[in-house]
Length: 341
Image (cartoon, rainbow, N blue to C red; front, side):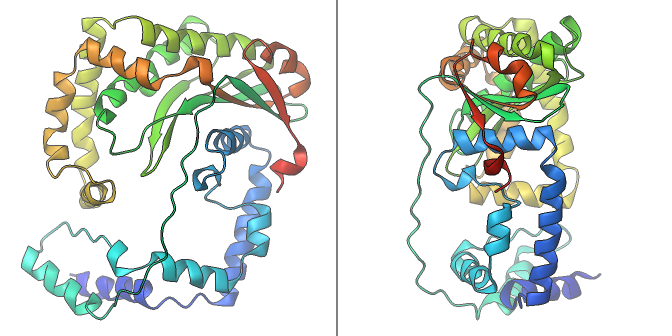
């Protein structure tokens, strides 16, 4: 019953933003204070240095929350320029889910957006990151830290990659849910951590694979060794029929929960357009998952897991762990001034 009022507000925000100086300054201060608190968080530090090095000289290497330097230097004119370049009719995707017909939806959209005219857009130059040739370890010092925050992985895949479903199933088995191999190894078998997980973060132009966990200083190298062991095993051995079926059952059972709300459905619909997926992608998803074979899983692991070219980022007590990290590759210690930029 509030649709007309809410839609009026949404369209006004999109078409007529003010970007008041007072609001910009307030948000800038909030972000700067947030960064000050995050600078002591191990997970944040390991993630920041991981992305900086795995994505190199590309936008994906930059933290979305900003940096001290960028937040202090940003101006209202910068924000307006970004708005004019990105918020454009040709970039707009609208998904409406609920008690509304297609004709009603199109009418509402035309009423509000028909006067929004296209203007020549700047050419988009996409710079892609390059995969690491060898494994390298990046250490960030947290003085007095009693545990290491680990994030290790390699470049991954884009969201529209045709192997996305097989990669997702493979990763679920490796470290994507509670009974995964990595979590079982590190949590149950060795008692190194309360939890460990792996994931593929897939974006429009690039993506990454990573394993994340936290362990005590003295078992940091043992943990890395076990992570590598599970990755190599996934690449070199076929999974069992039972393990593959268990993961299929888990994904098939949890997928409907991703479509329980109108907002969740709208997000899925937008993904179809944003990532150029097939229109029937979600209708055929479960069938495609259940058609996968253990040969498909091994192929995905061999193609997209690269234990010989890993980026390993660890935030912790560098003095205690640096020597043992040389086992895995060249070690580089991140300077404190880089972290605080």
